[in-house]
Structures are given as C-alpha cells and as structure tokens.
Amino acid sequence: FGTAWRTAFYAALVLLLGVVTSEAYNLITTAETTMISRAEAIAPILKQAQKRSDALAALANLEKSEPKTARLALAKAALNDARLQSTNPAVEIATKAVETAQGAVDAEAKNIGCKKECWRKQDVADTARADLKAALALAATEQTQRIATAQSEVVAALADAVAVHAAAIAAAKAVVEANPAPPVSPTIFADKTGWADWAVDLLVACLRSVALNGAAAGLIAFGSIGLKSLAPSDELSAVRTMFEKSLPDETDRPTVAEVIGRRNGPSGKGGPSGRRTPDRPAPGPSGGMKNPVKAAVFDDIMQHLADGRTIPSQQWLADKHHNGKKTTISEWMIEWRKNGVIPAGTINGRCKATVPNKVTA
Image (cartoon, rainbow, N blue to C red; front, side, top):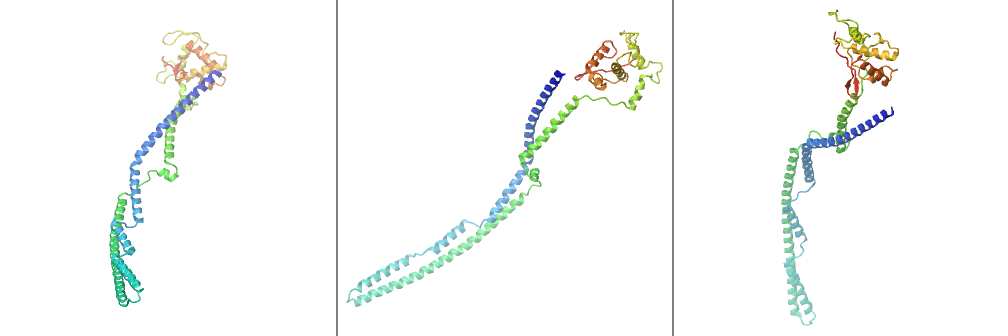
C-alpha cells in the first residue's frame, strides 16, 4: 500500500508540475497574442482619437493667443520710436546757436564801453532764441505727425492681424470637425473600471489561458475517474429475464443460463466447439461455493456476462462488494479465467475489463 501511495503521489506531483509549466507557457503566449490583437484592433481608433486631440489642442492655443503678424510688430515698434524720440537736428543746432550768442553777450557785458556792440550781440542772441523756439515747435509738430502716422499703421496692421487670426481659428475648427471623436473609447473597460490598460490585457490573457487549459485538465481528470455502475432499474430488471427465457419466436433454442451451465457444468463438456473444460461445482446460485463473498462475486460476474454487460475492472468489483479485497478478487478471477469460466481480460486503459463473449447455441 505504501509503495502504491508513493507512486501515486509522485505521479500526481509530476502531473502538477507539467500542468503548472504548461499554464505558465500558455499564459505568456496568450498574453502576447491578446495584446497584439488588441493593439491591432484599436490602432485605427487611437489614430482617429489622436488626430482629434491634436486639432482641439491647436484650436485652444489659437483662441487663447492674440493676433500677431510681422506687420503689426513693425508698426508697434515704429510707434514706440516715435513716442520716445526727444532729439531733433534743427533743435540741436538752434540750441547751440543760442548758447554761443548768449556767451558772446555775457562776455561783452564785462566791457564798460560796449553799448553798441552789446546791443548787436544781444540782438543776435534774441534771434537765436527765436530760431530755437521755432525749431522746437517744428520738431513737436513733426513728432506729432510721426506718432499719428505710426498709430494709423498700428490700427491697420492690427485689423489685418485680427483677420488672419480669425481665418486661422476658422481653419482649426474645420480640422476639428473633420476629425470627429471615435464612437466608443478604445479602452472602455479600463476607463469604466479605472484599471490600467496592461492590467486589463493581463486579466483577459489569464482568463483565456485558464479556460483553455482548465477545460483540458478537467476532461483529463474526468476521464481518469472510473464511473460506478448505475443502480439497477426496472428496465434492466426486465431485460435480465432473458437470462431465464428463450427468445419468443425461437423457443426450441436453449436459454442463456443453459448455455452457461452447459459450458461450466460438472460434466466438463465444452460448448458448441466441444472443447472440454475442467470440472466445476454443481451449477447453482453460488456454483457450490462455501465462501459467501466469493459466491456473491461469482454470481455478480455471471449475471453481468449473461446480461451482456462489461465488468470494468477488479477494483470495481471490490468497491461493489464491500467485504471483498481487490487482491483476493483478482486471485478468484485468475482462477475462473484459467478454468474457462469467464472470458480472458481485455485491457481498457490502465484496467483489465471482462467483456462478455457472444452467446451462440
């Protein structure tokens, strides 16, 4: 028993290792396949969404920005220069002339007998001051005109820049309208659950891998478990009457029980082939056996063979007859097969089944 248990344990361990290795490999390959398929499926949607996102960003930047053109920038610079200009060549010349004339007047004033000359130089100084005043007035007028001209250019340049800016906004809106939003989100499950895209892909791959390998492992496990015989039903009981009766339209033929008794009876006569078999106990419910368990097993086997049913394995008989041990039942069946009472065993997977032979008269 210990050897059998250890063998089963190691076999289960090897099987488990194989299943885990297969599951890991299948998980990785399935994950790669799932991610590639997902990427290929959502690529057009992502491209469409990216185009719309870029168009919306460009439109937002245009709407937030102010109208700008090179003409407007030059006009504003000219206006600033016109406002800041404080020097004028004519004014500078007139200022120097006044300073020179006033210096001459001051120098002549030191001479006590300079009446006539003083008056002349004073007239020169007065004339210089008048010229300076006229130059200042002219410079102010010119500056005002330059400022007005620059302001007019700024207004015209601004109007042109506003028109260009409006046209750019209209073009950006047209691009947005030409790139509508995708009908559905390419990552709708991740969006709804808040999960990362890679987590969703990994979950899908795990579920797919477990579904494939799990189904295969379940089928293998189901196939390795022997099914217990069904409980006798009324229909089966009715069929078993064939064991005692001949066919209705062939009453002259022997019954199944007679054929079995003729083959296995104490006379040692063989069946239709005339083959001789060893002497057996007198026919009866238990074949003359004193061991009640052996008799019950024998009757059960004979009933199954008479009904045309297969006995799956020796373990099946041991499970059915609680007082019977598999090794003991195996010895009994070897004895009965050796004596020709039951057919030879037929390999069925890891078990040896007993399949009924065709009964002929």
